Image (cartoon, rainbow, N blue to C red):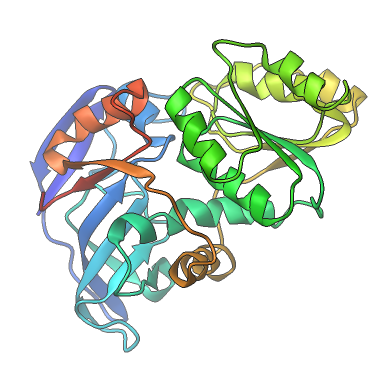
Length: 319
């Protein structure tokens, strides 16, 4: 079978590797669509101190929708569409996988793949939302309006935030952000986000600030935007490590810091599948580009450069 292997940062190879062998109480799946997460392209293109190269074939992509080819589990039949759960599924750039029942969730047969694959990142967003207090009537800021940032915008609207302020560097992302529920938007490359938020909150700061970028500057910006005693949700995976975070200000201003990374199979990912499948959450067209898996390097570069109106990129073995 085919797989993409990241040999070193910026060097990707298409390789052949043995087919996985399906065992008892497992299913064999064929990869139908993989989408690129904001945590994937830094590993693929630039490396991180905590990552050793070469990576195992298929890594680091973890947003995966597959088709069941054969099954030893009664609840999964050939032809079923399934969502792989991360962890342990961080090997999306492999053509075939063997999964156990606790590593996959059945998807509805009548929804577009580009829509249901978003259940994976939405599940992780739901995990941290379950840690929030009641935010009804709050003022919230979301730093970054990639697909994850926009999912937070959707959840803030759904949970009753009164003012939803979104910050990004791209005007086209801010336009979509406003369309899905943001009440105020700002391009941080053109105007001062601190003045903007303080003007909207009478100098008090926001009740909640969500960081969905993953760089040191935006991590520390949260402290300047949140009110004393407010909440900061740190979601973005930092591109470098360690990060210089102003913890003194966190302590002195009595800020509550919430973090999250991976979700629970049923509470988070299962709920995400249900919310999307039922139409309770309507996902915009976050996957703006689809490429063949043989163009994986170009896809990672496009995700990094944010050109051509890109929000999220899908990769296909059969494209």
